[in-house]
Length: 312
Image 1 (tube, rainbow, N blue to C red):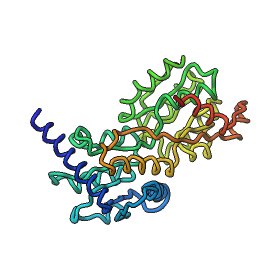
Image 2: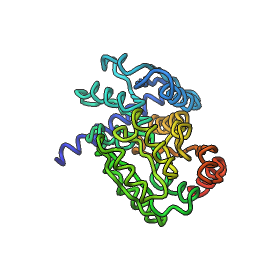
Image 3: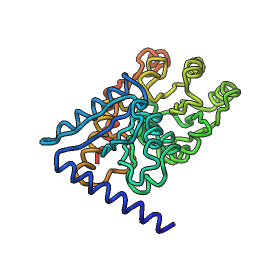
């Protein structure tokens, strides 16, 4: 075990030394594999490139394409960026038999999805990292405390996968005087579970778990919560448009820009930073839902208050 770990660390150091030298020589090969063409994934890729292009005297050979276009690991790139969980899995599999796979940075992947598919060996070696799609629990709980100061019981519907992260939410909630009411939602029992929970809580926090919140269930969850006059805090602007009271999220551009900064740091010869939450974010509020539920909220004001809480 110790011998294998030492080999992984040595391999990682060799990779980073090699790629740092290539950066100095001004010739860098970077693959950017997209889970989906266009849309948010293309926006993140464009922001990543724009951030890297800010570095003077650097020459990067970019190959940006849908993950299915990368059918062979040869000629091998020096760095790989995967945008979305599907691309992350595909790029790990493409280089699975490579003794020294190129470092891989994953973007726009929820934390629990990243951890489920991440190669443990590459994580330990420091050649796999990410900027998560979702927000840190503390940030979400701070927003709820700022926007909904009367909330004492907060509901969370989770699936088998997202349930593992409830502990972090529970800890952050207790520090802010909030009790988290958790229910695991099975597909056939989703709405009875939701209705039972809504009678016990003052707000509902959505999590990016497709087993719970997906194209088939989201509208009905939002409507059920709204009819019960329980505000739902979402995780994307789409949820605010669909009926959530508010949401804190990071845009594809913000995540791509952060990924570019991480990659620039690694290309300069330093270690690839560990997986992390996005540093920049946006707060959106549905004025119609707020008015209907009796709240007076302003997104820009909440966003600035949230930033102030995170400043050192």
